[in-house]
Amino acid sequence: MKNRSWAFLAGGLLVALLLAGVVSNYASSHPDGLDSSLLKGCTVDADDNIVGGSCPAQQARDHELADSPLADYGVRGVRNSFVSTGLSGVLGVLVTFAIGAGGFWLLRRRGTTPTDGTTPTDGTTPTDGTNPTDGDTTTPADGDPATSGDVRRRADAAS
Image 1 (cartoon, rainbow, N blue to C red):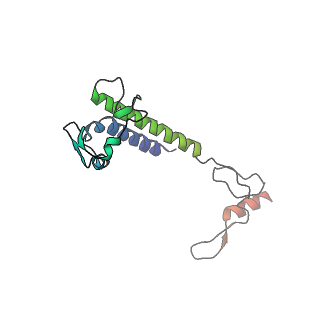
Image 2: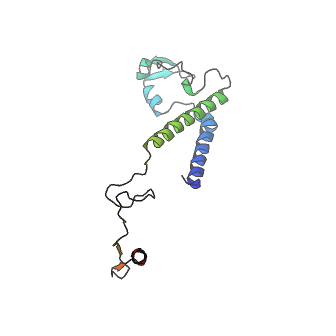
Image 3: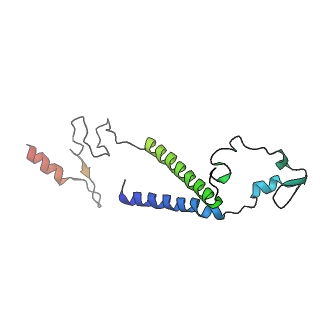
């Protein structure tokens, strides 16, 4: 990969880490659209606890992974909520980046030698003994076919 590509990738990862580690702490704690729609028909108190009415949110249960180390947008065991949320975001970005990079590494194209005698794209030469430039012609801008001068010189030198 070119140096520019590495710099772009590193810059993107750095921006994602900064957003996840710092900016995520300033996200709104108010319910989003889905939470709000699930609370329609219920009465809630200041802490968003349901105190009356009837709504789909009353059927909500804890997730099976509610006691996992990264549950509820934080890291269990870290007492400072700012650090806990930031660390959770950074770990999420790193895991996502590692999975994505691993997937791209597994699926990347590898140079192969073609079987039809054409010049491969990886810089190697064909294995069938033919020279792909023998007899090739180029067409200049005016449309007249012309034989490559390099091919003629090589043919003259070989004979």
